[in-house]
Image 1 (tube, rainbow, N blue to C red):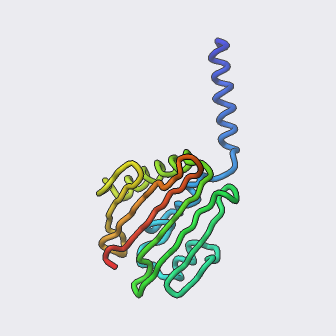
Image 2 (image 1 turned 180 degrees about the horizontal axis):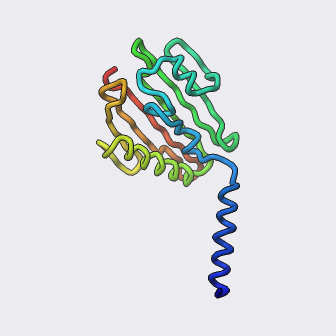
Length: 168
């Protein structure tokens, strides 16, 4: 076997071992709980259903609002998610992801964009920093999703996602 081929095989094998043993979960995986419309929650879910999906106590709880703050990789990286309720259940989900670097926010923006395009189809509106979809969820006929990159290009990254029941 040629030395170059042998070196490439060793490199590939080493990378395979490292990737299999790398701890940690991506930010996308931490915020994107499977199921429902978003984070395992469907528009019009009850407060009890939301609490069950979030699996940690809310930081703030009112009769028509639940608020969670969840740490990511450090004290400076976290996300918040708020759920607003009316008599039909959740009508609005607001998520803000705060990251130390704008490039990390751009990566998350791209991952969410790809995921939402697969789930919700072609956006109804799009520019460099904001993309909007509408779709029919299992519990509502008309839901709007907005994905925004609100990063400060010099200092920090911030991604915002909102789900809003237009039939509310």
